[in-house]
Image 1 (cartoon, protein in one colour):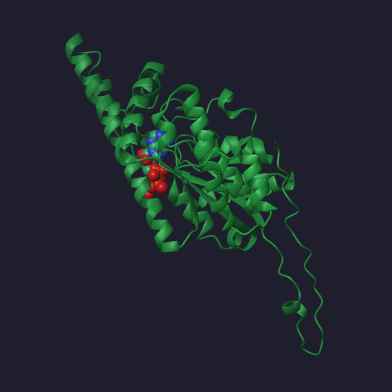
Image 2 (cartoon, rainbow, N blue to C red; image 1 turned 45 degrees about the vertical axis):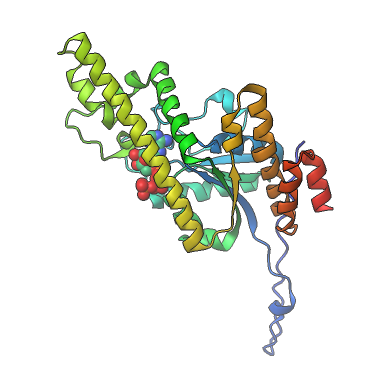
Length: 324
Ligand code: ATP
């Protein structure tokens, strides 16, 4: 089912009486264009959710992960594959020179351009990624963005213990898929891992291994590799905790109305059952939330949608009931 993006703007009348009576107060305010923002710690499923939503709402995705913006390290930074993209255009994904620092200001500039170009195509922009400092810079600190857009925040959340176990296994899979060779390409002779893509978790942790792999015996090499992989797991878990804390802080300090989707159930299941749980607790409710947001329906109805979807009502029925 594809849900169309409604006409978001209302014409703004410029009528003002010369005698000082300002007609603005009688005229409905110009409605802002709408943007969906998907946040969450690393590994929670932000990419999957944003692609699910993009297929349902005629949307395009703007990446807000500060390592995935760079060219290279596709495995290490866990970029979505072409197959996973399901034909949905992605912006700011693997486009930036890996040797430069892509700052918050750079992100605000490029993301704003991407959002405008998506809008011009009559599509919905979905900004998705784990770098909360980028999102804050764009949504909270950039007055121009604030004046133009209204945002709907979806927060993909997973119980930390479950997430730690998942990201640890993900690092093992990355290692099997070629993490070591990818990281070797970016290892630094001076051990300077403070610029550009070299800061990505997975590169500095391999430094000791790369310095010694050709001069040590097999056992030592295997031990060094295991230590590096363990360090990558540890740092990824720390990153997930930090990102989680940052989201809580943004929610409390900036009073962002975030819709939290608890994905834990889907993480605990396998195969078809996991897909079914994903649709029931994440994709379905998110579709309802975004549908309400786009059609200016009372956001309180969203909880009715979520409740309906939890007790098994199909998503389409729930949305229809809630938005009627
Ligand atoms: P901070 O202020 O801590 O940088 P942030 O919100 O700006 O927070 P994060 O996305 O949390 O940015 O990234 C912090 C650091 O975590 C990055 O500099 C990088 O070392 C690592 N990191 C983030 N995303 C990835 C990724 N996809 N792959 C590998 N490492 C990553």
